[in-house]
Image (tube, rainbow, N blue to C red; front, side, top):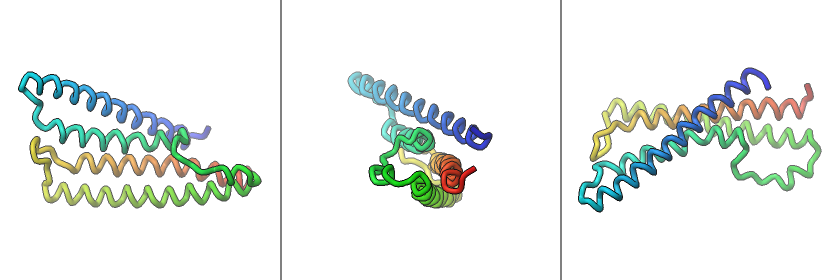
Length: 161
């Protein structure tokens, strides 16, 4: 495992733990809100916080899912092909993924900039949107790094060492 791959895996692992923490906080917040609603003291803005935390959870888990190859993949036909052709198909897939997540990252940063300039905030808690959108952009960039590692591995399959 080279240095670039270690960096990508460590980054994905850190984001994965942040995503897990967001899920735990969502669970605790929701449970506390349910109990407090029973006592007629609901937590204001619970819905907003859960929405923001779910965006963090989903976005930050993507890189780790890519490292673990936990996404849905149709590889039945590809597995029947020679290793070199598999490398070509997987290289094309990784390259398209890098392009897609690169665009998502870039557009997320532009979108977050708009939120920041316009000072967009949530309705109840008045939390700014832009940090969460920047987080989504950062997570998409992390997926790009993971996919670049995959691309380099697949190109090694194609062209040899």
